[in-house]
Length: 326
Ligand code: MTE
Image (cartoon, rainbow, N blue to C red; front, side, top):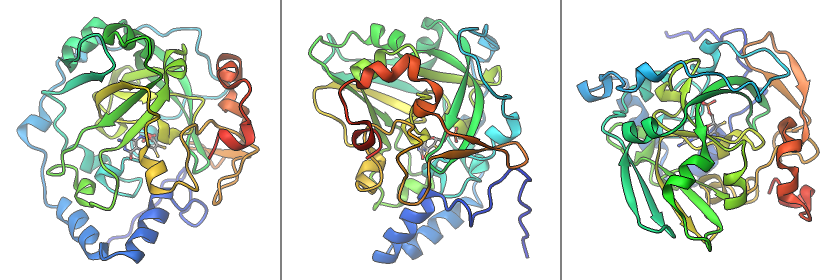
């Protein structure tokens, strides 16, 4: 019998039912998908990453990048081993333990497209894109709606720099982002009742905020696949589900995107998803958070995850209690 020993920093499942597990359980109970899910996830066990998925990263020499001292933490950096083994990446399964399965994903060649309201739509290879951007390291807090938190050294570049390259038209009000679709290597995507591809969005004002960051690296190295390599968003004032991984597409638009989690649970997840200790999720109080990588240390959660000075002005006039979470 396989006995899984929980690492001392892992939250017991009884305390934090992953949102994923909750929704998948509910959706599965209402559909005929249970058998399909079990079969698809089990089939993962026998697969090995292809040669393409094992190829070295051509941009590895760009790391580590210089740390930007403007982005400081009020807590210790989370141990790397915790950040790279306790993940949410539903494309590879609904548990936190998807790091091995994520190795199946080939991340070269990888292209990123710019569509919708741009001067001229175009597609660029990830290596060309990364080499065009001014890489820097930033220390950010990372807060999941499941009430756990980490402190992470991302390497990457400001989303505003990518927007400058994309040249959106002045009328665009939202940027929509999408993850790859590769059900041959990402078994979770074979579950058609999930609204694939994973989609997220920001208002243009949010996207241009100095904190909105695209990560290509982690702990002074290229980003691990389980953390969203080769390109993932990091918006530290919002709950972690806004920080979309494995991005292949940016679309500029006037229509507010319907996000993956909104489509799955519209009464529980909204577009804004700003961290707010005063607005409880139906299944998790947001008042405090457990620091992953510690011996169950809990700290009080701050409004906008402590980044109010940089972002509060984006939401002036909005009803924070209503609009920010749901
Ligand atoms: N992006 C994609 N494409 N698929 C996902 O399942 N999960 C989100 C977010 N980005 C997710 C995703 C959630 S719920 C969280 S909390 C963070 O990624 C987790 O990031 P981490 O595993 O690097 O901590």
